[in-house]
Image (cartoon, rainbow, N blue to C red; front, side, top):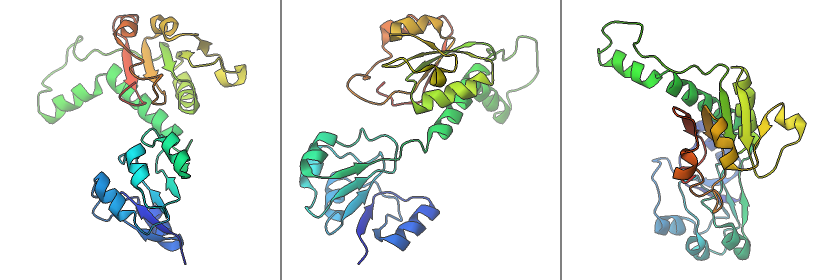
Length: 241
């Protein structure tokens, strides 16, 4: 018999096709967001759950899962929606998908950086609403990205890929992380031992931190005040950072 797996959201066709091939997959074709009670009810008689970041597995939910459930295999890189301590106590295996979104997140970060600097969203709205009437030398002036200073808060896998993309714009890379990276990973990036040290060196600041008690509201008012006037901030991590 194939292992039985509960899939909480509708996934890409190729993924669901493989799930049907390899497992007895309980899919969610309507992509309904299950309540906690519905999730626990649907977890009856399954061996594993394949959730997304939209499902919260806190201690209470984990404690109510049927005994047959042995694994939570996340369709996400982050796993802050799972109480790891409770899962470990319950004997559950918890997996995630590290690295698969590093390039995608870095590309989206660059898109947001360029869009904010060059006022792309404003220009797009003007065109769509018919409000773009004429041009003058001061119209829609933006900010140049090339050659500017980029501060990266969180220099892990994604932060390093962002730095690599930004070097294509001749940006000067500054970063803060819990530790200084070896030279082969820095590739010339300048380390700052605290967020406060980093902020004054950021024409652009991008955030790539994990969500944890230590990073909760990391970019607070006092640190924002240390940024240069007109600095552009891109949060590519979690909203609580």
